[in-house]
Image (cartoon, rainbow, N blue to C red; front, side):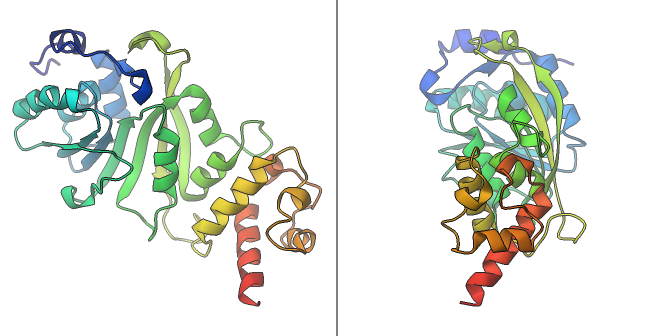
Length: 286
């Protein structure tokens, strides 16, 4: 299906745009691939979509062509605003382009529920944006799901299981609040310029507040601190890497069923939740 606009390669050439390495820009030119990303994100006709870093609009166009009710695209690079303006003209009333830094701009006023976040995130800021979305309070957040493109190595960290060498802080935070899975990989050659590594598309479906999903009693700030300390010194036993939290950390670990000699990558998400609650309770007791 043709959206009536020139191919992305022609758009980039016509506007004389070159990717900026400092902004982590790599343009996905294949309309079939961007349409695939849009389709695997679920039915878009009844959802608004938040897109970060649309660049020349390849994914933006795919989202609109696949029926997204309304797309809010946040773009920090002013060079792309005329290009995205052309896309908005092709889909009247369905695309809002916001010029600004996605780490600062609040998109919520421009969105109507339900909302999906679908984006080819800039390499430099993608992980920090994901962490911010995962630690959002109150929970549940404004978004119901996220379909995000990352470097393959980052995608594998998001979905890694305990015991896997790639299991880390990002794994715990993502799996605490979402069901995660890698949908498919994208070869380096699909991008301009060609990056050094392959990419992968990850889908994160948020948990509800039910006890069978995320533990609603966990303080996100404590979990962020615990995982940062634990995985910041992942070769250490937990009694060593977490000793700054409380003098009797060995006792607290044992209390929640964790051996003080265990290392960070061997502990499942639910044990991290139990540990955070135990630490909080100790602090409350003075």
